[in-house]
Image (cartoon, rainbow, N blue to C red; front, side, top):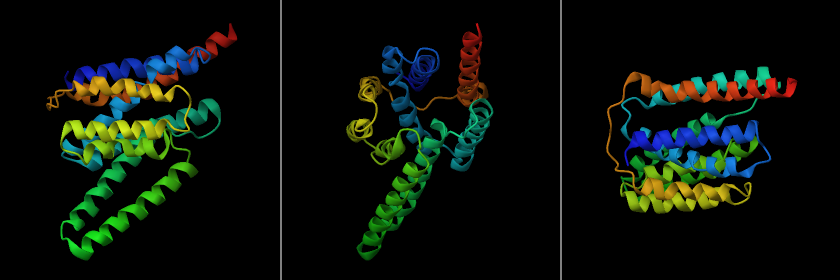
Length: 225
């Protein structure tokens, strides 16, 4: 199964999830199906960090999408609310800092010890921030891409990733455990890089706020009638 196929699956299940969240909040099946999307997107955040030629540009696209979502939520709901893009921004920051500490640790001895302690302190700060800012999927959700990124071997990466999904589901809503349904799909991922058009590259960033805005507008129209 290639990257494009998996992303399309994630896009469809994400849309189903949001239809359930906004239009049919009392029907759990929409949310259960929707649990498939986040792990797939999280997996490809790790892939993005590994293969992108410009990580700053990569995270900037997420930041612009998040800014649109923040403005949209504030206009529509009257309050600020961080979307999944902020979760993935945190993920990219965690991976970038991990790279720096991992590089320092290659010197061995005291440098490795200091790097290990430094990274643990950094993760403690990030854990605190995710709680204060109420980041979607919490600290373990932000950590998911790192579990894939730090393991070059696909199978061991999925084992760590699965453990992260379990940790993330603890204390979450009862449907969150169904996110494990994404693991078999990722197991069949061929791991091959694909050429993408500019349209495909930016489509997901445009589609995310647009479809949410459309669903909220549709919900308001339904309420009026």
